[in-house]
Image (cartoon, rainbow, N blue to C red; front, side, top):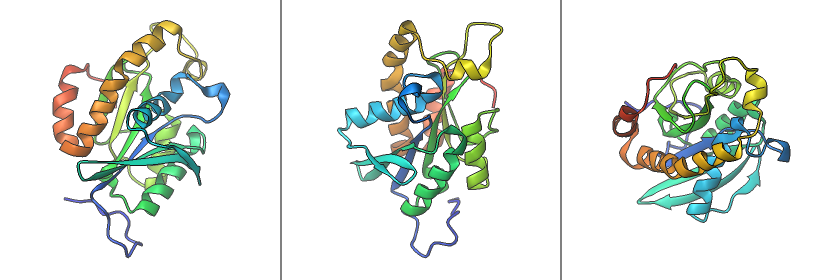
Length: 208
């Protein structure tokens, strides 16, 4: 059943449109930081599909078409803690169904380079997800969690997520970026359930 959440809109929701949002913080000081892995995925897809990413209100955005579907790539410019403001604005503006929004975020509980696609869940202490849940007034939205887990048993979480990947880690990240794109494209073309069945079965169980 389609969850039509844009009740105030007279224009019908376009079920062939998808909003793919990579979470991160803007600014040179945040480049290649663990919290910005969502930006990395969006940048990778934009390069592969030759999408021109342009600065708009509340975010940098670009779009491309694939087999009858319009895929909108978005990097919020609101900083992580206000990510939901950007997501809500562009979902409303583009008349996108809630189930056609995919949030790509870092996950400190998943091993580095592992993925977990979920239909819903708690924010898990992630401030970006927390704000998205507040702005959309629901936690029932798809999200792709990208593992950045530390191998250290004791560390400062804030310093860790805002720290940059090591050269060795970046090599590993670069190798799995194509798989992250594959998951996104499968989500668009095959749907959430089939994509979860195809990809999550190979992944370790993670906290919600």
